[in-house]
Image (cartoon, rainbow over the protein chains, first blue to last red):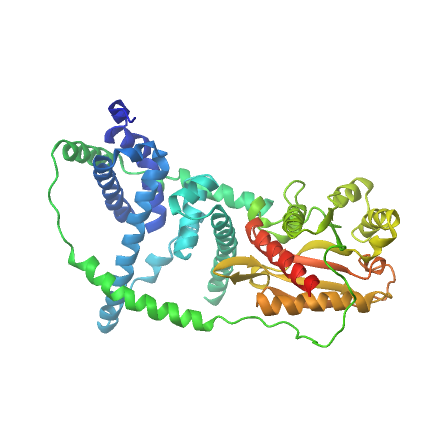
Length: 183
Length: 302
């Protein structure tokens, strides 16, 4: 039933077609470039293995399939980081005089960066929904397939996330003004 | 609509910004790596200790977190019951149920992808769909249902009527129905709306599924208030018993204006029911409709 000529979707072709989507997803989800690059690589390596093991999956929409892998990579990474940060904080707090330069942190005039930060402060579920719907511009059913959720869950989660973003971005603007006044 | 569009613009700005484009050097390098790897059969299986450790630690951590969050959850209790009310004899087989929607375009934000409650109106996807679910569940329970799907909001908009005049429109249809058969005055009239308040008030979880909450709204300035109240109260009690958390209770609006009766003076079993609110999805509404149908069946069988 499955012809091997369907193997035409070689890993290079899939890479050429989808690496930007994958990178965008991971860049927004992780919030930084180097993690996004690492995970993009890992995603396509994983895809290559999966293709060898199970060629049946080729019938799936390749885009949602690849983004599903990227999602697992992102969540995995997120868990690891949480774990590391937990210890790093403890260690950093014990070293006297180590202070992150506040000027470096707050130099984010652009709304793009603000949006990125707001997205990053969302809960994981909301973040996934926002990145896939808003940044990757997947449809509701594609998003549902990547996340393995019901369409209804995609709708509510996305809706709540947007409300949250609107709120937090307004707050940040207000916070900025307050900060100026305080000087 | 503005806000949502604004957000969409922000998304597409971000999407097309340089930040979200991978570095060309990196693209090339990764592509080469892939090609190399795909030609050599891979066999290196490294075990990473860190992930295993982190998972081992995460499991108990998550369990603790999960438990502590769960214990925080509590059920909103609604105004309590008055048990000993003897109610009007409505029995199942003869009872007709008349469902209508005075504010026919009330809609649901997650479905129409908007965020402001004042934008929660839609021509096509709206509270009439909730009425359809309710009708079909009631028909499954062998009720005779009349679902008036008239788009009163649309008619009112065309005529330039205001929000209160719109009850006059739905009243016309109700009166026609009442005049058809004398027995129709014993029908149960349900004017199905959805609330304005946000999801924290209008959503609960039933068997692990998000479900819209229901509130019964009554007007008191007419002769049928008592008997309408009895029906609302019975439904509320039954909901509390079988689906705790779904009912938000019975609310009476006391208006001195004799016209603001929500048409409830026309029947002895007439209610305005808010199923969910602007933040609910149709799936959540559907679950609530199913529950309401079940509870109606139960109280009419008693």
